[in-house]
Image (cartoon, rainbow, N blue to C red; front, side, top):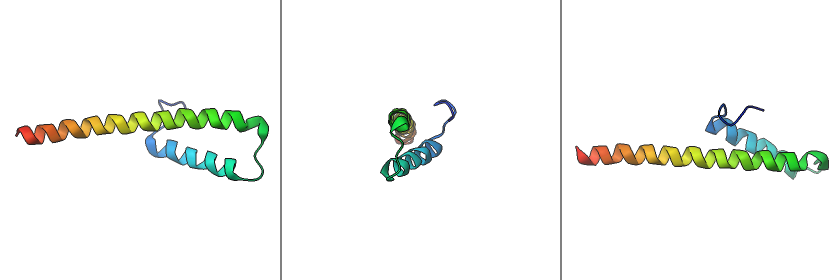
Length: 68
């Protein structure tokens, strides 16, 4: 697994989908369940941060457009 700094939004989302698919299966390994949940939590946090940063950049661009 890549570190959070190396993971892009699309990659994080794909990894989350993979974790969800595995957790929804009947063959969930209880020993790795906590690891998957912890990784999913980190990925969700990363995605929220990336979305927040993108929103701020968009707001800056729109504000510049309005000022022009």
